Length: 228
Image (cartoon, rainbow, N blue to C red; front, side):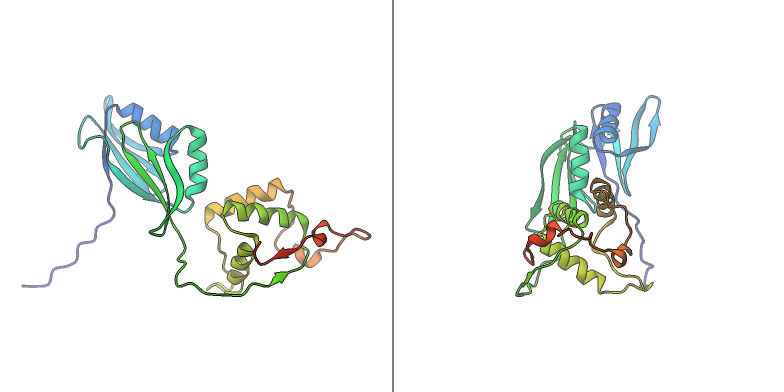
């Protein structure tokens, strides 16, 4: 038998039963931040909503039944959760770290379908035993405030954020820049934190930092250690 050419499939699109198409579209676009990509019929009874690259078909009165479960992977489930919670989405639980290596949030729609919004967690195995040493230093106070807020956002200690950032900065990328541990959504959060703390300088400003004469920085009286 001759060898057959492989079949190249693109993606899977779930089709969800909905009792009312317009109600479902309103929930997905207003509460879950999807966009309506297209609809069909007059009045429409079938259509497609999209979040990023994830598409879902909605079908009024057919092609399934209430209570379907599905999973959508994303890069910042916590940030997304904050947005849809404010919009009034029905969040069943989460976001929470699961033992299978994902952080998940479960959301219910008006037709009892449940979506598991999922973010992969960085691998933490095998464990690498280390000894942490105290770090007594002072850094620009607005930058320290930002790092503390960033650590809380990422559910890390201050020391862990510094370790993560430094280790990435030591690794060059293909275009001779340096690596970053942050995803796109985290950069957006960092921009907000810069505005919050009044950071108006760029990445090269550290070469120009000088302490104000006659003022001992408040940071100097604190101890910043490797445990945060």
